Length: 370
Image 1 (cartoon, rainbow, N blue to C red):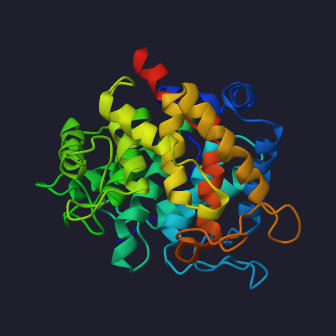
Image 2: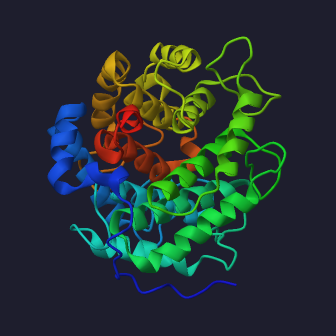
Image 3: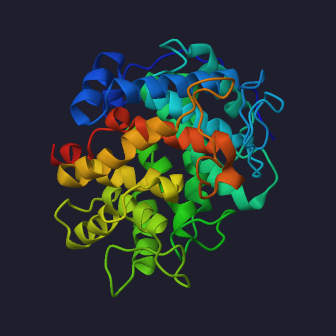
């Protein structure tokens, strides 16, 4: 059963929001300037958010397989998950500091949140489609969005939906392997598990209840997929070989689970990613998304070298004119990995989140050192 969407608005001033403080309008521009962004990257973020606003459905949702503009935009994805599409779009707005209580996109964000919460089931599950393959991916993305919305605004109407979304993740964790995969308590893989961990950490930052046992399970999973002969590299599953994307995701998970910046395996993994910086002929938004966060938290030469390659490449690739202005084409100038499946919406959202990295979160080791 699903319940009616709550009325958004009542604010609890005690909600924890320190982890989201760099997104405030009075801080965002300075953070971007000091941490590697520029006017062009900020303009790209605003263009992208405008594109998302123009392609939101009247009900408040977004879609991966349908872009709400007929055929004016090419690059519709093949995945069917309005939950994931809506969660990712909302994260792009939150990453730039826009919420349903502040900023010029209040109505867009409010309708997106209302759609998510009205489709939440009584057990906390946010997935509204029927493809098992994207079930927990989708729930994780949407759960992060709800937690960030609550953490940024303290809106009491969002506390219960966000907590229930976290509770669903905890209940869905595999009791033996420690991770998540596709459907609740079914196997584990690093890709799905990363989204769930990020939701748990977002919930924790927002002041929600997250049991420490859930983090212990994730550590157990990561230990099972880290390459024993090359620490700092991670596999999708113990039966697979290490890959760039899973290494980036695994390293970010290690960072959020408390690995120190001078950890030998973390440094080895970051060195590996640094030698495989973004290239136009190898567009891989999923890999870039996780690696960008790893390098941002590492700071120093890791971040300056990575950002020098990524930022201008993303700005250059964004469409500037016509109906699709503000988005990224999944097939041109080169085909993007997962582009056909995720399509224009998925690629645009991930690219926006990367361009918002300068203020989406405090650099992790500064926060941990405090």
